[in-house]
Length: 112
Image (cartoon, rainbow, N blue to C red; front, side, top):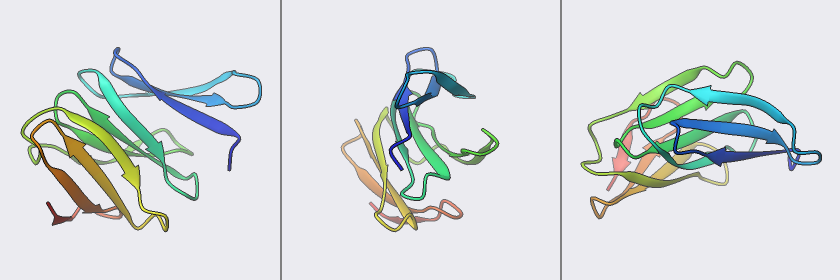
């Protein structure tokens, strides 16, 4: 909705900011290594994060809770992530030379 922005950080967090005045709204904690990518879902209710340790998380924006963890699928750093335009899917890419397509509701791997 343009009211918030998200940043990935080397401290293992992603931070959500007020886009208008730059105020920190909340911090997503739980990754064990650098967060390399992050994105809001189109409806602004979820965030996907990609981590240096190969882990991908989907977070609830309202509670800040990690609702879905995908690990062991990529074999190297996960560097980028994004939701589909309808929010039903998300994509990840990695230094393992793959891009993967996931179902956003339960993390089912659809295609590599």
